Length: 420
Ligand code: PGA
Ligand code: ZN
Image (cartoon, rainbow, N blue to C red; front, side, top):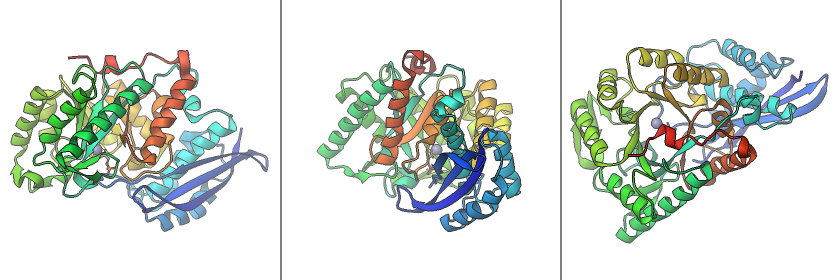
């Protein structure tokens, strides 16, 4: 079994030009290096308050080159659970502020990569083992707003889900058409300001509903049928809108009570082909989340991101109280691969869905695509269809789909999102 010979931290840069941390794990038999695994920590802008704490990049590098390096050396790299347990012990804090969740997640993922490399297989294959797996269904942002595009719309993500596509590759083909059509429509109206943090258009809209109509128009312009071929998914990241118990829509110059927002979303579900809504209410507004799950949960996917922050105890409480029916899985929200997997296991057992997700601050790191495929998580959220930190992940998905070939389980889009 390969053992960890060395762990190195390095300061690198992310898609917002901010410093972040990369970890490199060298493994070998005896003293001979055999393989290297590498991973970079991402970072969020609309972070949930329950997220594990990231240190500044310099401190994270120091914690990898110091405490983590000493703590992991000589351990077997194939024991991911034991390695992650060691990381958690070395940190010893509930919010991971001693080692830094960014240092921890980079090392945890780098260990997984190093183990796969030592076995001479891609990470997804090592994680899947003998299980047959399917490609995940992408949620892809077309318009970006909220904390990712100041002065744009209040909602964070207006995304599409190619519910009628027969493969991951076809979903990307369709997305390219819709993305281009949406850009052309904005250009024609003189409403295109640029692209937001995750590559979605940063539009000049007058209301938060307008992008929904624009999306439906763009899907049709692309020669696809709204609802049957391509549906809509939203991320309100509503904690960002929450002010003194109400939801403030700066673009429209008004605040909505939870009840009014609930009614608005129910109306939108009637009017537009929406199949999924993430964080429709704030992380501290469990009652509103519960009421919305009760009224809309049979019809659409309701995803907890800031609401669950990839924390098992929060997910369990949500399951008990019938809040949301899906969880967003972001490894850096919690700090380790093992804890992220524990959330997926618990979600699946409870009949909750899951989506592996990138952050708004990303890099060329493609680890999350491997986690989604290898663990059999049926959905993947990576941002938009522009900027290489996003495209690197979609392109990695294409490579994996090709490698899976005929051995892949059926692409799950149709099963997840029944055609309307
Ligand atoms: P974040 O946004 O990475 O800025 O938190 C992504 C999301 O909310 O899904
Ligand atoms: Zn979110």
